[in-house]
View 1: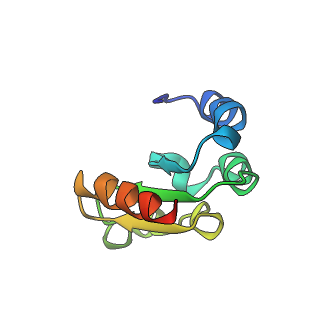
View 2: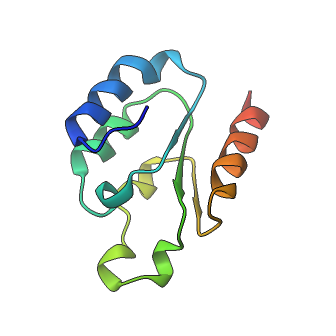
Amino acid sequence: FQSNSEGALIDYLQQEGPSSQGVIINPGAFTHYSLALRDALADLPVPVVEVHLSNIYAREPFRRRSVTATVVRGQVSGLGWYGYLAALEYLVGEM
């Protein structure tokens, strides 16, 4: 699922997340300020992995803070598209 709408992402996570085996999410700019998305992720009963194509910790100071990182199982940052595969491999190993 992809959306640029914070509310749509939260609605989707609340509807589909509990029946999934895990969630891989790239929260984009919501990473840095969306407490609502953070809370939706925290409520999920399944493992969640946060993925970022670029290394957010090597970017501008305001992009180095992830409000979602504290509620996810792990974070992959800076590996480009391979980060999604790494997240999926991790979740498969959790099953």
